[in-house]
Image (tube, rainbow, N blue to C red; front, side, top):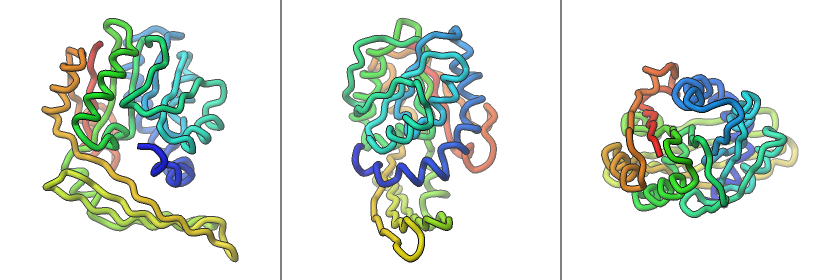
Length: 243
């Protein structure tokens, strides 16, 4: 969960991060931030390129971002000036303090490859939360993987062409995206090949792992029921738990 995401950072920052922020922020406000006071501390788990981090910061919260990709964090430093950022794996980190709330959005925890790793992540997040602090995150479901991860897509701009070849294996529940990116524009294109993976975690297993990590009052929300429209909301579940 580290260097394989570095080549993706520039593409994500330019073509996805801002769009998802618009979809995710109202849900964060409704389900998580409404439960704490302005000025209190919030941990952004797997903060990526920091667009959501910055938005929460501008709402008056003391936000700290955490991500395993140094390139993602480089963009986050530009997008979320003044926010505290840490380079660390969600399965093994220690910031030395506790927060009033935590969240992880844009199915970031689908990138954790197995249930054991997800359980480790929940344990580390729980250790960083004050008693009764809320934790919100979202996961893609199998219907989303069947629809969006068995296809080919492309990003085309004057200075970048990126082809994404995606496949979901229902037996292993692993989705693989093989990407080829050409950057720089004519006449000097630079080619980069990289692979991204997600795992379709069973929601029952996720619930069990949350409770074993010390969370309780776990609630599930269909993304469309809480206002996420279009493709982003399809077969996506938000989970809210209390430390």
